[in-house]
Length: 144
Image 1 (tube, helix red, strand yellow):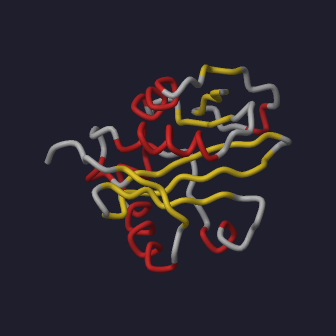
Image 2 (cartoon, helix red, strand yellow):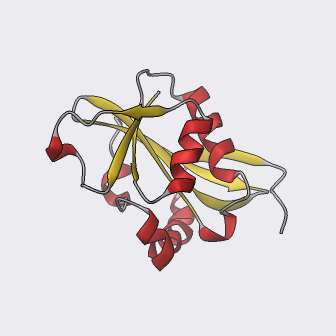
């Protein structure tokens, strides 16, 4: 499969949840991620921003932002079948047009080179983790 021609964001709807749950159940994806989203806490919280990532009209993943440790953070999860196709980079660029709060932070697993590269392509740079309780030993913090 080639790269999708149309990447878009929209509000998460209940019909998206089964696909998003399946993305998060994929073993290799879980190894690459440093967290698992809890949709029952995300959707009702007005301080959180959650969008479904669509690739050629198909649910490809999700992207969101929330407040934690006094910072606005961003995170995303893209289904494995869409990896390596530019979906995450395009989705993050679109999301950064919607969420204009700066600075904006993202944690990534140290071994998740692809996700770190997506963040760097979108202007994020590595930042020091000032409070050891905020991150796992295998995470890096990036800042925009």
